[in-house]
Length: 592
Image (cartoon, rainbow, N blue to C red; front, side):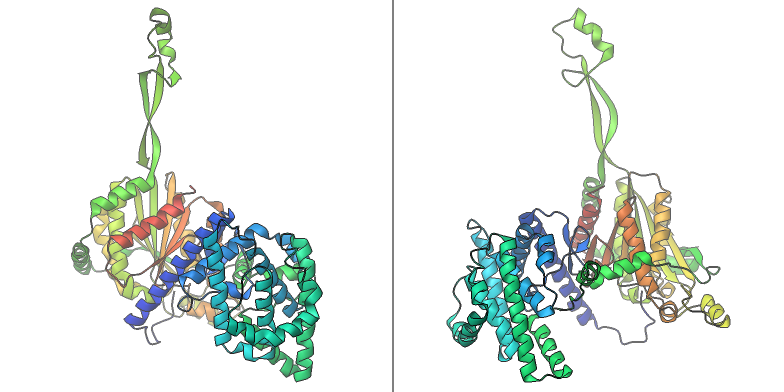
């Protein structure tokens, strides 16, 4: 998944810090999404790639105070934002909102802000905690806005004053004395301009349509005031552009919501992530020359004596971890168990009537043991595939990954599950024989994939762990690791999984980033490897024939996979790491 190691590597300390930050961010998003789902009853809401999605589509947050930052904001701010989003989902009619939404960017920003403050004012009195969280978040944003120096600009002060006035008018509570003094003259000016409409917003806060009419009037008036201000300060295009950029920085929003027709507006409202997914669906992925592609038993690429030494070292490292395999096995048994029929129990006093004992009803009226009950016992019927990214950047992590996968494979086999361990890489760095053939043929445009694919089988599903244990150690042969073609690897693993007769088929990808083959990326107009991965993972998740999840090694992979977990390998491979992996597997399998 990475280019050759020509750039300076990240130091261990930097990598650990980044991994910890990613884990905290992912944890905050999971907790926030759970809170929003509970309060709004929108069960199809989740974060993916640090973006909020509702029913698989991006859910934009355009009010300026709904964007807390990890490291800058405290947990109270994140709780406040979660409460605010839940209120938006409960009290906002999205179609009605789009109907009233103005076109000019500044007007649209003001309208979005007013609508968000309206729904926050509807927090129930029996939710004092939510009300406290909303106040805390708004106050924190106000303090950050002032500290940024944006209130010293004319546009920043205008918009900030409107936000404060609206917060108070809609029942948010009194302002701090310093804020009152700072905005006093600007507030008096704005009241002369927007007074009639502004005076009605509290009265109509329970009626979105009536409120939207007044909010639109205020938004258009603010847009006109800011346009006039721009003309007074400098009518040339550069000055107006600077003012617009100033406003964007002040409110931390992308005001690129232009477009008159419905299709244009819908496209503008989609996030970058959504557009990527559309491009992925439309992608015609192709291979320039697949005649050099190979699938290898991985142990065939390692000398037998070296393989023995690698296995011995792996066993020693696993013993040092002090893992309790029996406890892990019990947890996996509970995770994978499904009720299985184990025959019938006869002579029961309730259940289904047993036709063979009907005569008992005549000969012994008092005997009620004429029923039978079906016996069920929880058993696992699953096949699990570990698909491991064998790109160069995975080399520093492969020892920990080998221990993780080897231990899980042993435990899974104990509960009756089949296990397959696969890897994927390329035949060369920076393209191989396909690249040279393409160069000799005149370099036609958009050639597709230009490296030979190399798929490695460390353990197949039908080989027991005891017989495959030596071969699994080939994972530690780091010079097999080059670049990565993730989308094709998913297709390969899917094909092998579907050939296995099992009730549950789980594909767990272990990777540290996006797909990468330098030659393919440089010689095609699109980043076809990235788009192909999105295309394949999206199809697998929609079809549901296999359960797909991913472990991101120091990186959040939720941009590519619906179910993912950040894996921090900077610490000891302890039971907590395995619990996180099992939690991911359970979350992925819960909709089976």
